[in-house]
Figure (cartoon, one colour):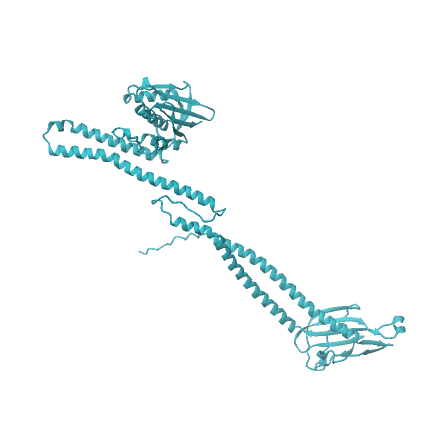
Length: 482
């Protein structure tokens, strides 16, 4: 049996630096290539025009040498001025025609007696340049001109009779092609060097521009939220990086706080469970050491059950706190008559607080309706009432007031304390397993009630806050959006 090993396709990683370098280099390279190509074509055209101008100048000079003396044509050519036509092995040629008959040829055509330069009809005083293979086999160009021979006699010029001539000169284009090739090679090399130079410069510029981002990344690598309070600092501020740095610092601070809270919560959970576990161990050791002692055996079972129930309460509250802080709780919104709901809660809490009917003063409209999840609302209000009744002075009433506006419903629960809470206590009152010093000795209070309330409020988009009121009264304010 053969097992085929299949590799998962690798996800291509995108790079801001690479994309910036490629895009900027491409744009600048296109601009440079366009400029170089335009210049190259312009230079090529200029060189070619110069070659044509050279042919035109030579043609015009030769035409001035043709004279009409009273009907007799003369060609006064001096080889010392235009030696390129006098050499037998020269590569430049000319030929003159009069009435389609050869009038004069350059000495360079002597080796090619049976070859005539091109000649065809064109208008007088016009010329035409064509590509032409020279008699010696080289590639060249020929310029054909149709002109009138200059008349020396004034009377002849006024008679209206003139003689027309055709002049063809030819020259090789090997030097022209060589110059054009050199120009093209120079421009191509310049273009290639410029493109690579642009990419090098763009890479350097982008690297320098991305330095703050790379520096931020290096600082993030050095962070350790488990250590002392740390933040990302910068020696110089960059407009685009500062919002990222600020948000990262907020995130880091929040995570450091969460980490410290987790450490404290772990320590508090261990502390809460340590006491009943120690009690179970102590009771078991005593019972094993004195198995016949009736005083111990009479209360052993009930003591074990009470301790176990306390541990169960702690674990259940911790599980409820965990569920309230996650999306595990599915909200089921329904209409609730708040007055009837609070009355039902007070009846349920009467087994723990027998005097609740006398102490709880309600100020809520009879027909006041709200929309909320019944389980979450029950857990929140029962914990708030239980805490107010337990921590409030037994001689002072508990005031529960409900105010409803167009936008929200506010439930305020006030109870009197022996002394007002400090600002630090007010900030920590909703922290998990936080207890006031006076309540640490009570085995039924574990500091989880208000933490559960806070988590459920966050889950339902409620707000909960604690404030000191006059006369050492504590107000817990629950706000529900309508």
